[in-house]
Image 1 (cartoon, rainbow, N blue to C red):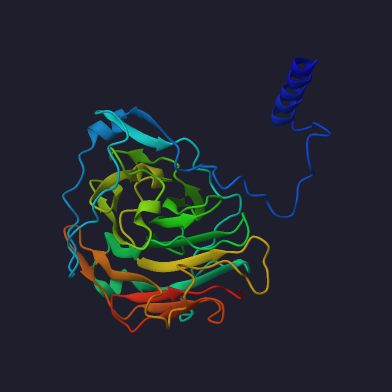
Image 2: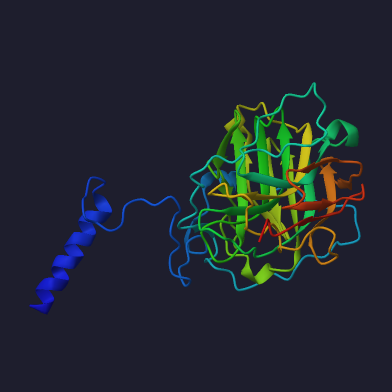
Length: 339
């Protein structure tokens, strides 16, 4: 009898998983997504797969040396996860269901077209026209990794740097995010035609670092990131090596340089609460010397990433999430919203 009941329960579960029209298969859809058990892991799970023909065909650019006091990399954590000739890829690295909104600067010139930001998005960061730096082939920074306190499973927190062309029509971004995990993960994304494409088209080359990897071992550490246009492709660097690239063909060869560089923290509040109560960065406001930091912000010439200064600032709501930017190549940002 007990065996029969177990088989019946498993059968019902199978039907509930694979039939969208099923009735009586658990609670109805809620306004806020429920969190799985704390032990669940989504984006840190990976599979090993052979290097693609594209990855074998395209050589990586030289090391993207920057100009700044911090030249050393963080000691990579853990052993090589895959055999020689194979690379890791996240088993589940989902695109957020909501559409991410680009950061806007508070003092963007009126003549520059921009996209509107959703009410549930909050930003604290800076942007800089590459025409003012003279270097248009990429960006870089040391981004301090944090594990923000998230109030709702649908909330998302990121910290990143990005290279942008046009009114956010073409873009590559890298940093960390926390979304539907209990730990931060490696964020990577691209935009084509003003539409966020997540990791579509990504070519993985690094044997250890991959989009969606668990960054728990790096929490509290400032890790170097670069984005560089080289050999017709947009390459992305994490810590001490090139992870891979987005082929230039994704943009039809039209995205060959950027006219704006971004560095910022972001919170997406799933419930559009007033005030929001999810942390940005490590939850400390920017006036605190221990608040999350982004240092050595630079724009790339193709061989060197040169420190920038005099960027435009963007703070959506300083009482919730604040920014401290003295005007050079470093900033502090963050806050706990209203909680």
